[in-house]
Length: 85
Image 1 (tube, one colour):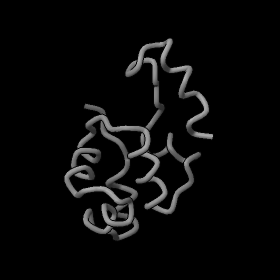
Image 2 (cartoon, helix red, strand yellow):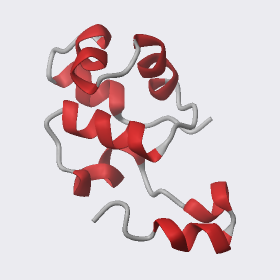
Image 3 (cartoon, one colour):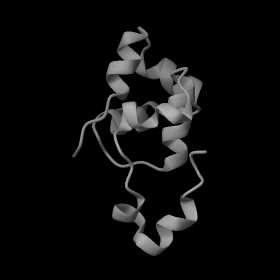
Image 4 (cartoon, rainbow, N blue to C red):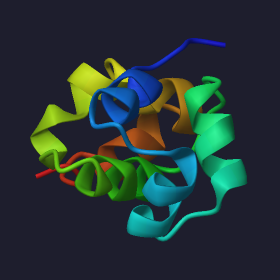
């Protein structure tokens, strides 16, 4: 599984997993899974970004490039093209 930078950003803010989970409205188990590189919903990524004090436009710095066609298939990916705007 591809790692992301969630743990790095969280630790740089001296924030615990529990605090990030609380601010994002997610469970600590979800934070564990995301930090381990497990796939998650786009809305979960958005909540984490905002809880870290980042903008949604910073998503590629934290999660890398999101290729929706890998997850959804190319025809379904176009339906989400404006999600991050």
